[in-house]
Figure 1 (cartoon, rainbow, N blue to C red):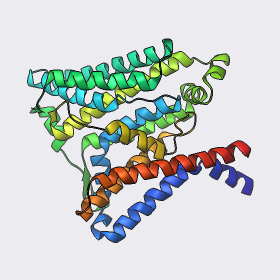
Figure 2: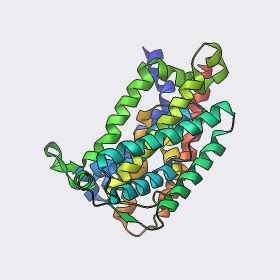
Figure 3: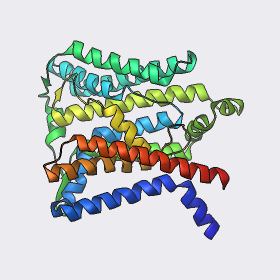
Figure 4: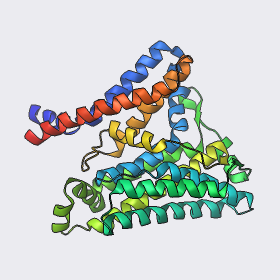
Length: 326
């Protein structure tokens, strides 16, 4: 029994560490600023980080295959700008949303295809994807476009009240990330597709020799990453009711940091989306504490997240070494 418990801790050490640190940071914030103890402040973490959670989920699968996707922020900007322009042109939101998702899937697929068949480093390909998407967004519009569509406004302004939590509320778009998280977690842990993702991350050549469809899986993973980026862009444009090519600067780095803090190794093969959720929540909690303080620069968020990322890389290395020798 003791051996099983020890094995569980070693195997899930990074995830457990992430959860503990989130709880500690939130408790400290609540003690420093009693207003943080209100349930609405906790649910605001999901409201304010809805887009970051969505793109981080897609990025988690990409990193599990030993890849990277730097295009996510550009895709958010492109999706917001393109959807705003189409809505202003009179196109129905029920047509715009599927078109944006399809665009994300196609761009993700093209990047995955180049990475797999031309053996180009994911860093280079997705960096080109970032520049392409951001550039296309600025070609569509150099200024912010207001969205007046009734469906978008309804999704942005409708509150879902939670009476068991002091009448706290969330928005419909807030639910997209948690639902996507559950689906992806089940997909990654209970299906052959999920096992193939982990096998590719651990050793792609071995996965190929085992007869696993490594190429097809990587194409699906990058396509799904593009889908998540476009979906995140839709949620972003709903929350702001506008589209602009300059939106979400640096969010690709926030997403990578959230995934790493959540316990996913950049070398692939180890991690899960539950850890990514807590990585996003830690990021959001740090921002919330700084907002309640009111005197510190927002750049302290970058410093704190950067420091935590380095610490978690060290923690992951320690647990990985112990797991290897156990």
